[in-house]
Every structure is written in structure tokens, then in C-alpha cells.
Image (cartoon, rainbow, N blue to C red; front, side):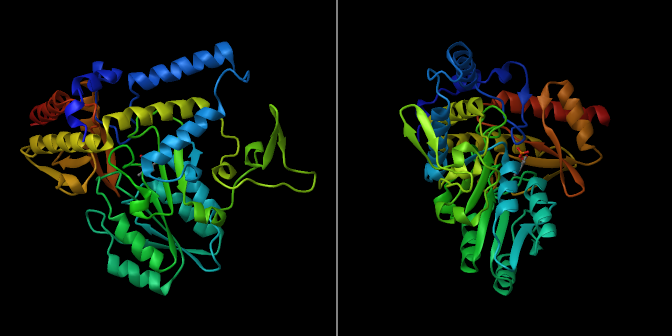
Length: 403
Ligand SMILES: Cc1ncc(COP(=O)(O)O)c(C=O)c1O
């Protein structure tokens, strides 16, 4: 662990947002650290002054460097990293493109638990094709009944099971490893929506043993918006139909600086690997930002991010626990949840409380568990203890004013 070498104050100062706002809504989007901002600004300047397509400025090279960095982050091969616009985009690519066998099954957790982005694309696919959808139940903390899951899979073998690694509303971390073991036994592929974990805690696709994974740069990794990642295990890339066509997807050879594409008026030859799925990808600025964001956060250390986030959330939860009428949702133990704390206070409307806090420059989120409104606090490693204390004192002030 690098904890001893970290100067937490300088990290807090790296995030310009800390000067203006107590931002505790990182589970939505995270702000960008100064170093990443500077890298993006200098890249765009270079692009404008020396490029764009002059050969003096890196374009695809940055995309490949970012691909390498993303693969190192989740422990896979760069050839397994597909760039997308968002988590939703990645889920849609697989939900639309997966080649189910004749009797395909999709298994999901109920829509009140999983993010709707990990529900609707699958629901759509199940309407359009001969694919059956099954919604599993889960307990209050979002854990799936594994015995029932296994019985269902045994009776309906083959398909895709898609789950969030951690729940967006109550932060529970799911035991993906065990679920993947059951899924693979019954010929299911497992898709993991890691939108709420990558950048927040260590994520290793080999350890989780998943087949697909989607996450974004702009949540916990703190990259600029507009870039996401889809992991597709190499051995199963052919099980997914690619969308669209792009010159970058074709086999090619180089003749000096000229690229000769392998296609005729009648046929074409596609490259293997991620480029098949990246038709038209030109988000060079996003790739530069993502690369720098991954470097920045891994320099701090993802394990250290995790420890700091447990510390900040435990402080918030502890300090809220004496509020009369408060009810928390999700696991109490820090190691079973991410950096999310969700709660309600008797006779307090979540949206009213969140609006009041916003007037005090404290940003939290009004979210939901099914039809139940909740307040969600989600600090990240650059937040300070003082920010937590200040926001919670405003919550207490709101309640006092109401009484
Ligand atoms: C777990 C999870 N999945 C998917 C999404 C959708 O993300 P995006 O809109 O960036 O695609 C979110 C957004 O909050 C999320 O928390």
C-alpha cells in the first residue's frame, strides 16, 4: 500500500471543485482533477496548432495507450477493451448483438434494484427475438437467492445473466465470483455492469470471471464525460454481432504512410478484436482524458481509494445515525458496500432535503428503490472530512428548522 506516501491535502487541492462545492454525488458523475484538465487542454491546443491530421499530433496512438491503461486497470488483454460512449452504450452493444442459441435466456435482477440502463436494453431484446427474460428476486440488500438461480438455470440452460457489480441506489457489492461459477456451469455468459465499482474499488475481470463488463470513465475514474469501456472476453468476441462498418474494422496493410484496406466491391475482410465494435470512434479527447485519469487514480492507488472511501462513508453514516427517524438502506458493513450511503428521514421528502442542501452548496442525490424515494450520499477519495461534517450539519439544521 502506498498510503504513507500520499499527501491527502494535495489530492484534495487537485480537484478544483473542492474550492466551490461540497460534491457528494460521485455515484452520478465525478469531477475531473486538474492534471486531467490540463492534459486535455494541452492536447486540444496541440491538435489545433499542429494537427489535426498532420502526423505531428497523436490520434489513434492515444486511443491505443488508453486501451492499454484500461486493460491494466481491470486485468485483461488490451484486445478485450472496446471503447464506447457510456455504460448504457456498452450494455446495448451486447444486448442487441449477442447471438443467442435457439432458445436463449436473459436473467436479470429486478428493475427496482438494478439500474434501468441494465434492464431496458435486455427487455427490448427479449421483445424482438425469441429470447426469454427472467427476473430474479433479491433480498433487501440486493443479494440474489443462489439456490433458486441455479434451479432456474438448470431448467433453462444457456443465455446471458446481467447484473450490476454494485447497486447504484444502495451500494451493495454483489458476489459476482460465485454467481459466475453457477452461470458458467449452466452455459450462461455473465455480463457485469461495473459502473459503480471501477475506480471505486479494485476490479479484476479474471477474478470475477465475467464474460462482459461495462463501465465509464466519467464516474469513479474521474475522466471527462463521453467515454466508456466495454470488456469482451477474447474467446467469445465472435458470439457478438458487430454494428456498423468502419475503415478501422477492416483488415489493412501499410504502404509507407498509405493504408490499403482489404475489401472489394463484393466482399471485405474484418480484423479480429475490439475495432470490430468501434465503428466511427473518434473521441480522441476522451481517450486522452481517460488515459490521464487512469494514471492519476492508479498513482494514488485503487486500494487507497477504497480505504479512504470506507473511512469517509463510515464517518457520514456514524454521524447521521443519531438523527431521529433516520432509516438506512443497504449493508451496514463498509466492506459490503461501495461509497454509497442511502437513507430516509421520517416526514422528510428526499427531493426537498436535496434542494435545501444545494442552496448550501452541498450536492447529494435524490434517488429511488423502486417507488421509494431516498437520499444518496456518495463521497470519493478527494472529498474531505470537513465536507462530510458540514453537509451532515446542514441535514441536521434542515430537520431542526422543520420541527
Ligand atoms: C450501475 C449503473 N449502470 C448504468 C448506469 C448508466 O450510466 P450511463 O448513463 O453513463 O450510461 C448508471 C448510472 O448511474 C449506473 O449507476
